[in-house]
Length: 456
Image (cartoon, rainbow, N blue to C red; front, side, top):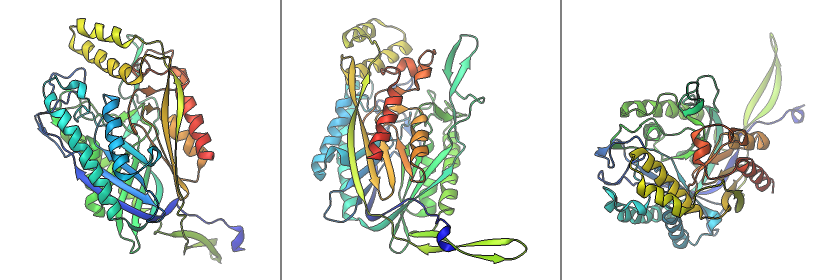
């Protein structure tokens, strides 16, 4: 009878896993204006440290690793800066481009990673800071590889209620504004990965959750990882192991209470995620354990007894990088944007034009652009990353199709450019559509490419 009943287990990978974490907090005076409504260009202090966390994965020591890095930054304002940093990591570790994913948490209270901001107040720190960041990232990856031990990565889905829909209809001006919309539901999926060594001690925790770190707004004058900071500190205090955060497909997701200056609110939002992570960890099966149907006990009711049994997770490791061709919307040329920027006097308008300039400069003046997609397979789980800000449709569809495998989905991986809203939103007056350089249908093309890549 036992063979007629399924087993239950979590997605898992067993191999060599390394972990490392370093503090990458910049000097308080660095240029860090992230909001058009902001009145200040530099931070005056630090709320919580910015961290860079690195996990490495190998099936065995002789194999080239997969290197996963997460850092508390918003976006790469200039594509060359991010590409140069990644190329140095690739060279130092002898990796191919498919084997590195450098992910940003997307805090809106960090420094701007853009050497074109060098002439602004606090901009004199940017070049040396990016160089220091490069050295820190390489050192962290090397430390993780050096300390790698036989370990098991076990995934489990949970839920967290911090994220809400942030596309609110404005009935007065017949547009959408970026803020909490209580009428719409939001993807509350939380994916947690637990790394344990052969003594079942926790060596690291991965948290994949989709929610904009925009608790702190234009009134905040402190460097901060936003809610990610207190979430990470809570999880690390409980597990005594580094916690790596992966920003999910959060294009339309953010906390209900946001845009504040009080850092206490960011800490509270972080605890919401942190306790959800701990609840998910507590509900996991033991490492290398599945539940198997054992027997039926006749009592007041016929009782099905399931018992934990050992199993050996797969050690498969593979990685692929593919390009997705996106059509661009009809955009002003770089020269035209720069002309408008020079003549604009309104501070908010100048900030919007500067961001548009960064995007146009990063993508070039063509009609199409090749956007990379990374897909990793670790055991029977997947990690999928891409550089833009995709709507949650991206993660929901991949998880639906590839269930019961765990699928970690990441925005802002190895770069950053623009939003990827669903095609039906392109006829609406909404920030994410007019900010995006990509034509309608780009999100759908990304999803189909990811599906094809994972099925291979």
